[in-house]
Length: 310
Image (tube, rainbow, N blue to C red):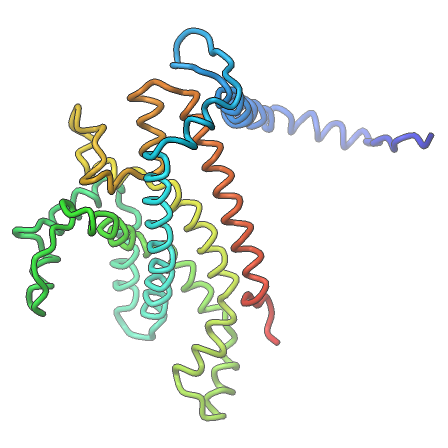
């Protein structure tokens, strides 16, 4: 039997380890107490019946079987995937367009960058309340602009055909953050590539298609994965849009449950119905969905992401 190699530390290494331990220990304790333990405990709770008080009663896979026959569970899943499927690609395009605008060489570009980035640092609940006013069917600015081109009044928050799309529009107010990341990617593209392409007669669209877009694909991949993970966790805008700050209205989900997103339903199961077992099972299903979507995106990225200039 071959003995496992032992880690030999010099006196200086041991001294450095003793010096670093007091600084590392708070993080280690916090990781185990507030990250690892809740994760493991939630997995245990997903196989129990637990109200948050008293003792948890093991029920096996009953919670998952309940979710498999719950129409609201599938409604929330559909609403969430619908939102993510629209908000992420639209947000990607908006962020790239904003980055291209912020990359222009004009005198006031710093002011434009600040104005574009400002909404992304405002509290989400504040943006949502502003958006409610903008989407008001009677005096909202959005319907006013649409009326100028002959579009009839849209009840954004009262018509189930438009409620989810209104949240998609709201998500675009935070595109300034990803736009700054894309701006950094645009500034990293070698300028000589554009000069060579211009000498060959390539126009702006061809330069963007064959130079800019391929070289920023790693950032596009990052934005897709990060946006997808955030998208399936959408909660705050829907909670506020359906009156989540006003007593009993907190447990409505919009017309025809059109704003019953997955995490919103998870919240209801945990804190309205006091069923932590069901909520924990939903949390683990959401985790698996996030992993599957991320793996799919990563495998798909092999066909279009370029990590070097070829």
